[in-house]
View 1 (cartoon, chains in turn blue, brown):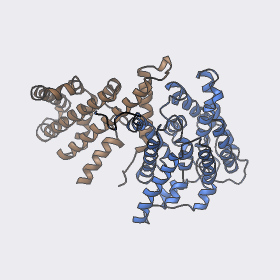
View 2 (cartoon, rainbow over the protein chains, first blue to last red):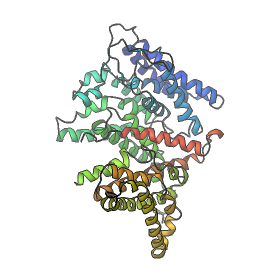
View 3 (tube, rainbow over the protein chains, first blue to last red):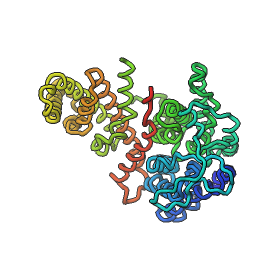
View 4 (cartoon, helix red, strand yellow):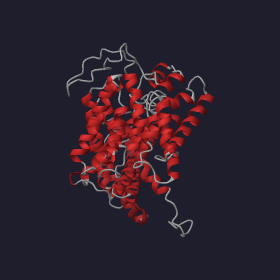
Amino acid sequence: MWTVVATLVPILATSVMFFGPSALLVTGAATAGALITEKVFGPRRSLLDGSGMITGLLLGLTLPAGLPMWMAFVGGAFSIGFGKLVFGGLGQNVFNPALLGRAFLQAAFPVAMTTWPTAQASWWQLRGDNLALPLFSARAPDVLTGATPLGLLKFEGETTALRDLMLGTTGGSLGETAGIVILICGLYLALRNYLNWRIPASIFLSVFLFVGVLHLLFPTQYPEPAFMLFSGGLMLGAWYMATDLVTSPVTNLGCWIFGIGIGALVVVIRLWGGLAEGVMYAILLMNALVPFINRATQPRVFGTARRTAS
Amino acid sequence: MIANLAWIFLSAAVINNFTLALFLGLCPFMGVSGKVSTAVRMGGANVFVLTITSICVSALNTWVLPRAPYLRLIAFIVVIASLVQIVELAIKKLSPTLFRELGIFLPLITTNCAILGLAVFQTNRGYGFAEGLAFALGAGAGLTLALVLMASIRELTELSDVPAAARGLGLVLIIAASLSLAFMGFAGLLSAG
């Protein structure tokens, strides 16, 4: 688990490069919320396995830079408390804790969660009212804000250049902008066999094929497949959230089904939904289906009949 | 026409899922979601009663309620409940197997808020017979989907080491809330088209 934490460090560093001190404040608050909850309510010495750290960091990396720190803290505490410990702790949760925390924040603070700061004049400037007091309304941010590439696509009909999406010079959540960095870190984890490569592969394949066909049929109406792959949280979600060992299917066939389902839901929500981004919801929905996928793809017990009568 | 019906079906089944988006019909959702096989049966019984409800409501809206609008709620409840009872007796006589499959659920569902919710929604939105039928089937499919998802997750958590404070209904409510959060992703789906 600590290897996964280590691969998150370059992603965090990239986000600090783009979003300045705000990135550290928000990620730190989310991680602190997760770790303190784990320490207080979790079993003894459970901090040492690193899973709470991963949840907190991943949650922090999916938050916008201008979010007040107390909201990030609440999100981290919710992730661990209601996403993991209530289900019985590590290995028994049904939903990805980090994404559940983010979905909770999205439902509770919809405006703060969809304000996206863009590049500022000074690196040191905070990207929003990070230091707002709990439950007080945040000061109107004194920063430039803009839409994310997916928001631009959905509401303005503009696409962003692929180069910007790869390097991360766009608006978006803290850790999702630099596609190429996430890709490298994820590939490293896949090569070391820390995650099942079939899950990201099937997500990317299904998104690519689905959007590719739509783009070929209606080139003006739908974006290019490469844009869909590198925009929004797809990279981070596919490499780090969907591959969570606890909440993904057990069998390899199940992993393919799981990934294809996520890809299809992402495209459906992004192109036809009311929201600009759907990776989080797609993964949570497929998490809910994992018990089914596991049951359906249960391998035959060696030596028994090929088809049982049931 | 077909597209409209398909949209009504999909909207009731997924986007405005009765249980997970509108929070109707929570009692069977909490009560009989312990096992997948029971949940499937409960879902089937729900589809059945919802379909009957929709047909009743169409008939009432056409012939009775224009003349006596103040009877709306009473008429819905009485007519639906008694018709379901009659159908139950008929099933008991004609097909004991199906009767055993549906079991106690059939009379129980009749008093469920999802049923009355369907009747009121259908009237308020001015759905005709075919639209109402699509709406009822969609709502039933949505209830079944929610029940089965819930049951499969609950079967999984049977064996986990749930803290004492959350054991039983507490965990069920938390799972329901999580499912509901996940279903928020469908909000506004297809509303433009």
